Structures are given as C-alpha cells and as structure tokens.
Amino acid sequence: MKVHIDKIENYDSEKLEEYFSDLFEREQLGDKLRGKKYVLLKPNLLGGHQPEKGVTTHPVVMRSLIRVLRSKGIKDIRIGDSPGGTARIETVYKITGMKEIAATEGVELLNFGKSGVKSIMRDGFDLLIDSQVLQAPAIINLAKYKTHSLTMFTGAVKNLFGTIPGLKKSDYHRLYPDPERFAAMLVALYQQLSPQILLNVIDGIWGMEGEGPSSGKPRQFGLMFASESASAIDFVAAGMMGFNSEDIPTVRYSMEKDNLLSDDIEIEQQWDNFVFPRVKRGRGSLYSSFINKVPKFVQRLFYRLYDYHPAFNNKCRLCRICVESCPVQVITIKEGAPTPEIDYSGCIKCMCCHEFCPYGAVYIKKTLLAKILLR
Image (cartoon, rainbow, N blue to C red; front, side, top):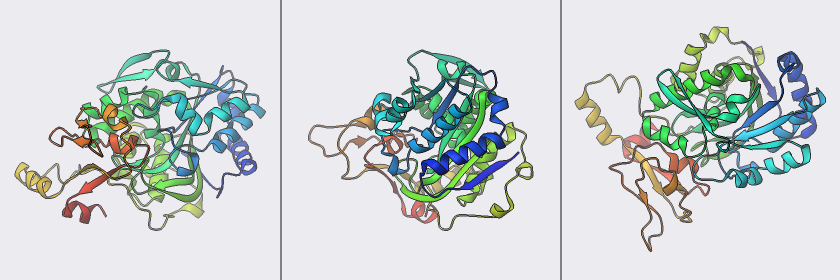
C-alpha cells in the first residue's frame, strides 16, 4: 500500500495544483471516479478557526483540489463536514474560508444532519451517520496534521468523526470515555465509509503540535500526505511525528481491520526513518496496556497520584460552547463568576471542552506525576 509524501512548504496555489494533478495520475483517480455522479470533499473543520491557526484544512488546499478535479472533467463537487460542539456550520464555513471557495468555484456546501441521519450497527456500535455522506458515490477525505489531547494523533481515520452530525458526537464521548473504546468506535465508522473513500489526504504544510487539536501551537511541517488507505497514511504520518504508531489505538485497530502490516506500506526511500525533531505531543490517554493489567489496588493508587483534568484560564469569554458541548453536563456558569465551573466528580475527561473552545480558554491541569509522565 503506497503512501505518497510530498514536500510543499507553503500554501502556493500553483504548486498545490501541480501536486494534485500529479497525484490524480499516481492514484489513477480518473478510473476510480469514472461513472460517479459527484464527489464529496470531507475536510477537517473542527470549528470556527482562521486558516493560519493550523486547526482546519487550509482553503487553498481545497481550492487547488477542486480546480484539478474540474480540469479532469469532474463537474459536481460538494464540500461537507460537521464541526464539534455547538458551532454553526454556516459560521465555520465562513471563518475557515470554505464559503468563499465554494462561491468562487461553484461548489455546493452541505449541512450535515439537515437531511437526516441513518443508524447503522457496525462491530457493536450504533453509528448515526449523516445521510448525505452515506449517499455520496465518492469521498475524498482531507484531514489536518495535528496532535490530539485524547487520541494522541488526529489523521484520516479521526477526520471521519465529522460525518456524525453536531452534538451527536458528544454522545459518543459520553458513551465511550475510555480512549480504547472511543478509538474502536472511530475505526468502525471508518470501516463503514471505507468503500466510498477513494483518497485520503493530510494537509501537513502547516499543522499543530502540543495541545491539539485546537489549543496547540501551529507548526510548519511542510509536507502533504496522500494514500488510498486511511490506516496506512495515519501509520506513516503519526510515526513521522515521533509516535510509535502502533501505540495509537486508531492506527492499531484500523490496520488490524484492513489486514495491513507495517511491512506492507510503501514510501519513498528518502522518508525511511524520518522523524520531525522535537514535536511537542498532546496529553495522550492514561489508558495503556500496562496500567489496565495491574491489580485494581495498584490502579487506584496510580490514579490518585496521576491525574489530569480540564480547567479554565483568563482567555474565557463565557461563550457557553463548553457548557452546551459537555456530553455529561457537568459544566455550569454561575452569575458573576469569571469562568465556568466543572463538577469533577462527574467529568469523564473526554476533553470536548478543550477541543471545542474557540478561544484557547481550556487547558489541562495535571498533578506532579502527570506533569512528569506527560512532558
């Protein structure tokens, strides 16, 4: 299984159009798209973040791909996603630059959830997927290169979570607070949509390190990744960030489902063993195979000393997005208080408040042991 890695340092329209035109031929997209009524582009539009923040798929990437598809005879192109929390998709499309792209290029913007959802059982998970996604004859999945506070890494597989409309995503965080089970749900979703996905792309020209997927620091990685396989592209991209890819549940489970081994993945020789230096990682999951196997009394002692939870800083604007997005409703705003309050006895540490806050007002507070282990 091939993973294409191309060095592109800036959002240059001409270079990106050349890149997608070449990729179109390398991946034989003409043959794959023949007879398809239209193609759905699924970017990462987590929330209303300006493109330079490194949170969302860059509009120049989208525009370049649209122009290449049009030049190859693909006339009907649609863009769709569902942002996290309570953010309105119309606002997100405007702030992320997608509205302008759609207007100038004549592309339809979809509102996931507006046309209904369908419940599909897959691997024991009840997946509520937008009907428009399920009807799409072809999907190109355009992820963003970022760390993640819950899943450690967000890539092609995680990007498909946006096919579940609106606040329904918060229900999955509530139902599956264990990162392993949450990852298994994401991979079930990926497996359901995989036959429709013709290509996976990760925008890594500028990405994010540290407290991703929205509160970290933008970083210029200067790369674009592409592959027919979401599991393969995530394995390679996460490894180049410095992760042991097989320690990331979404990568491990998706490769198992695809019957894909690391030796089956092909990259150009120049990228063998390449790792970006000193990438700051997100505060990954506590749940490891080690701690889950030790006796319960050891686990209780460990978790007493090792703890982390979301907290608020002075950037808070009391916008209520965290309150409305919390899947277990433990965040409240009291009259006169400068920031919301969290009932930690009910907090499931899903980090939705951290992920969806548009102002970077939620940080991860850690005990001393957590600070040492999560450096």
